[in-house]
Length: 334
Ligand code: ATP
Ligand code: LTN
Image (cartoon, rainbow, N blue to C red; front, side):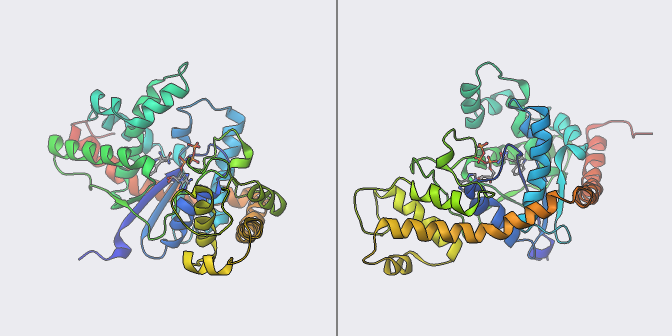
């Protein structure tokens, strides 16, 4: 029987900028929490990032920073495999093999493709269209059992399952069919300026999102400016999107339940509450900032970690890649 420890988890994040509090609470913090329970493999998805325009020097910098950020947030290279996607050539190779099992029709139905094509009408490149195939390869190469993802990636995971099943039917069993991993605590953090929208690193208004490297003053200032409502009572209720969002952030960083938070701020105004949320968030991010600065000052160590990481990733994925080549009928590589 399979124990949880033998189950493989794969996930990745794109190096498109400093992570937000949303990325941290909704994704990376959960990745950290499951490291002891599963065999975790995490990647910085730089191949995915170039589906939209990137400045080369910035991409290189953001990729290293994202890698260091994962470590600063608590991903431990002694426990998990962590690497940079483009370093492992299997990803680009598997992308081709799987693209021949993906259908034009199903790729056309991806809502992210439609949304990104509308946002960048002058650059609807083929990579943007086949993005989910590359993502399917990421997952299937490691025979992942579970994939932690947010709502926005559910459609892509469903597609990965369909591609895997189709390949297995066409060529014989090879890929494990992955399931989504829904974390126990997985808050969807909203924009501080428009709490009906998700907090996102590509938002134009810098006050809308907390970046995990923001200093204490900046964090507190952004929370002070957060949009709330004309009521004065701190309570979780329908129609109070701004306050609900702040409560869910406060709850995520302090571990307190909504009832407890309501009692804590009874008789106090929004000003006090916003300050408390700002301080709690800033305090919880402080160790991340310190660790990040340390890591960025030791590039040799970072390099050692991503070198060991890709070697481990290669070892696992090359086995699947070789089997896939045999299945489709390629002559063994001399
Ligand atoms: P972009 O603005 O470039 O689209 P993003 O901030 O939405 O980026 P992604 O890189 O697409 O972030 O997502 C990385 C991970 O963080 C995903 O698992 C995603 O579900 C999660 N995530 C992103 N934003 C939030 C949020 N506001 N709340 C909770 N989880 C989030
Ligand atoms: N598309 C994802 C990042 C990503 C990913 C993956 C997530 C690339 N490959 C494989 C899970 C599994 C995103 O933009 N959040």
